[in-house]
Image (cartoon, rainbow, N blue to C red; front, side):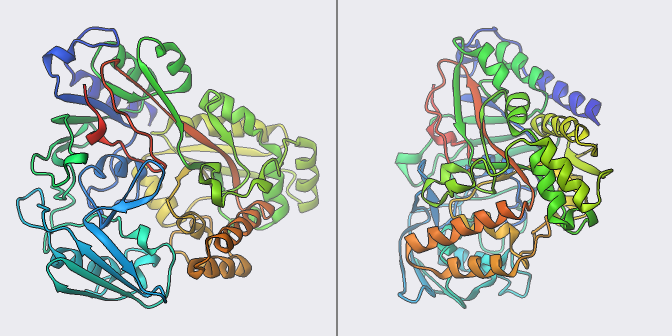
Length: 498
């Protein structure tokens, strides 16, 4: 498995042309309008209605746009809709659409495209709703070319943020092979195992967000040392790197480090017999040294967590969860003995394309060995993880990172009993009630209280072992400017320039 990944990484490097090995790079004179970046994993799908992977969204958000967009602070801003109104009962959303937008295929965007998109993702066209948040759409109207009205069957405070999902042309069926959106960059090429190429959309409607880089090449690379070598030889212009590598590159390259609004965790399948016992789950929380993980897997570039929420989400974050499970191997042994699992053994399924997750699993394995628990590591390909673990919930435990969202509901709903991708299989009626109440609560202060209570429930019940929010660290050549950090996975190409 690892050998296969390394081969892919090396093949990616061989696609580059040779250039100098300093931060300025010879490529500036050879191709000043191209930027070459890394992508940590293979895209799960290029279709915006199928893809769920954050690495894919980070790239394709340059191609697809929704009715709304978001800025660097995570605030909702106009996108394909220039403005909107929400009825007092929270059930009717009226969007006023821009009249100057062209799709990448040259066709003009109108309410007909938006109506078809929301009817598709809500299941109103006879299909299956894309998710719970779209299943509440009861009717979609397009009274004229520039107006879209969405009627909900129940109020949901998270719905406006949900409308940032990409809109494709009415009747278009080839999104998985040749994406067509309205964004500042067009899809050009995808070679599996190698790269995705985007090119500048010369007809983009918003001059303030129009890019200057004409071509962006995202190389699918997973080997940290190969990435550093490619940077130093001038074969990459901007790349995600490890913390230890950032220290080496500092000075010769621009280094960016910022929290990701991501929760890394040892996810526990609560349907797996030993993990049904809260004492076992709590024991694992005491047995795992989270600082070891931060130092060993993330080179110190991470924030310790004890719940499924990052402090980046300041207003909604529950500080009382911090330090809830101190590193205490003796307490772990006591709880395992009480539960009758002194000789516990289980498997950690880990996507092999994420070195940080693999390193985390190795540290966890050693931590647990010290309290008499045998945790075997099973490395799998990313596609297998998505199908077996995330979609089908067929696993015992897994090490993964869950990306943050702009709305707290979208983060915490992952543990709601009837959420279709509750792959941890946690069920708690009180938690469900709180989530439901928060979903329709119009008062921000009260809604924050409810979300904080939900976080504490996840912590107290040791639903999984939440470890940290790792920093996203990138290194880029000195003359490449404009990088912006967002609270969601997004490499904003339109902001980059030489």
